[in-house]
Length: 113
Length: 114
Image (cartoon, rainbow over all chains, first blue to last red; front, side, top):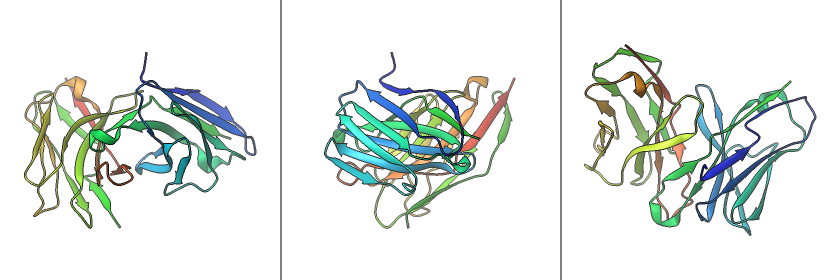
């Protein structure tokens, strides 16, 4: 089983719908991240969390919200999805002692029509 | 601000050819540098890293040397295989004492033909 699991892996929805992407990890890491990948733009940070009570905005947080339900769970929500949020979303974790290495889930592909 | 720039892709090579993917960075301090690889349908995984100037990271036949004087971290492999076909991302971070977040380049797609 993967150490970082994302659900759903694929989702098609309509403009205005609320969407939640979930991430769970078994690595025991405190730090969790949500990134968005668009072709030709690399990965951009949406939100990150150092523990359950510490959540921070990344570069492109507008239109998104997150919830850190437990050390192992970090969810990303789109309250009212719009077409330009169509992208591949990645959850990642890191350990303070690993010098910056991130461990990624397999991604959630979201299409907003 | 801090940023990473990679060479444009896609890069198409024949099997056993030599590979170079250029990466340069702009940073106000002394970052750690990484190469991540994304195989089709998968998430990113760490390929190699270097934490200080002149360090060489290596893994699976790939190498990259941290060059502070040219602010570069170019990825090289002497003989590519079809299985190396993937998207390669250069990235930097300022380490675990900071936010730990990575700044990524735009990615370079490598296609290796038999």
